[in-house]
Amino acid sequence: MQPGDLGVLPGDHASAAAASVCAAFWKGFGLDAYRKELDDKGLAVAAAQEASLKSRRQLADVTKSFRRSAGTQVVQAVSGLLKSYQEEVDRLTQRARAGEAAFLDVYQRLYEAPDPSPALALGLEAAARCAAAEAGETRALA
Image 1 (tube, rainbow, N blue to C red):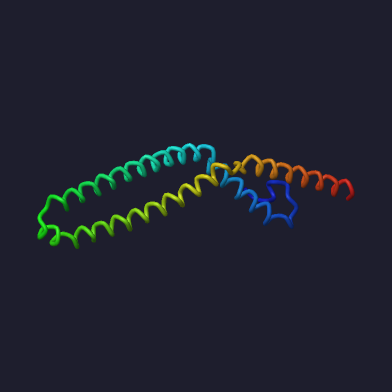
Image 2 (image 1 turned 120 degrees about the horizontal axis):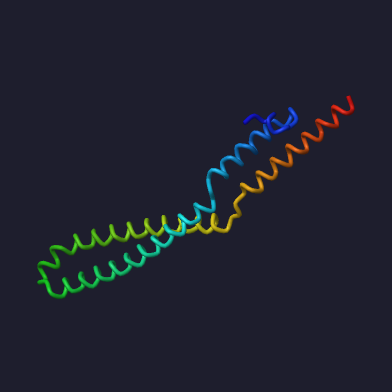
């Protein structure tokens, strides 16, 4: 679509093109449908968080049980290994929490944002009508 197709004056080609591109993007983006996807993914994240918390608790219980039941030499031999695994689990947990927090922040902002495509379409139509009216006035004066 060319800016001139909208009935926009020659000096407004750049702004009309930018508005057209923006309107086309948001129309194709389908914010309302995307919100449904985000809802589903948000529920999956919440379920995964709950499962992870339960799993970590079970792992901690099993580790404590192992330390109580194993001999002193065995506990000393695997103590460093267990500590390394725990540190890695902690790092992975921190990374997962940061990613989940970022997702939930974007999710919340997109969920609250109005879909701009109808307003952009109305704006483009109004601009085209104004340009057509101005062009009609210019022809009438000539």
